Amino acid sequence: MQGTFYVVGVGPGDPQLMTLKAAKTLENCDVWFVPSAFENGGSMALKIASGAVSREGKTILSHRFPMKQIHRGETPDPEVKSAWQKAAKIIMASLADGQDVVFPTLGDPAIYSTGFYVCETLQEYGSPFKVEIVPGVSAIGASSAAAALPLCLGDERLVVIPATFENERIRELLELSDVVVFMKVYKVMERLVGLLEDLGLVENAVLVERCSLDDQKVWTDVRDAVGQDIHYFSTMVVRKDRCV
Image: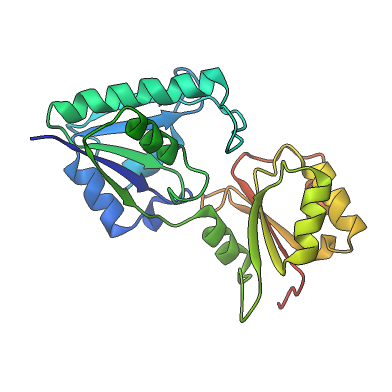
């Protein structure tokens, strides 16, 4: 019997925010294929999963995925593509042996997740194996809760974008939207805050750093975060109507 490949969202950081289905899937799978950003480095997804489900008796396969920008519709960086292909081959080998494999991913698999790139690569290889996606609590939703700000109300328009977009594109989206959530802000805080000041929106922005973790920090004045060593796990919410 062939195994099933599960991509499971483990939430933004606090193991208690994992869904019951995510925990049950991790318990039932003997092979955990965990992503790491660095060679021989730790895995935040594994840390979260292990906080809710025992690793005892599990086969843990750690695989490095380079942290490089990906532009949809364009050929990915060769190192990135190679990492996806190697991951797919390792996963297919376990599935062919009849083992179920679970890929724990931060937040929700549907939002900027490596898990879906691996699924696409499996399809490119013509993989006959079954794939299931288990949604999770997103960093977007968790950051909104931490800041006590709604993401959207009534007929408000919500946009989620990487903060690495060029200024003109960000400016356009801010003008067209009621609420904008910025991901990947840690490297571009100075530029982003400057743009918000130009648009008169800087006081409508809230930055949530290391959301749901013990050292979570909510920056109600994002100008204070400029020049600081902001963690990779940071999200900014900008509402035209602050509402609270």
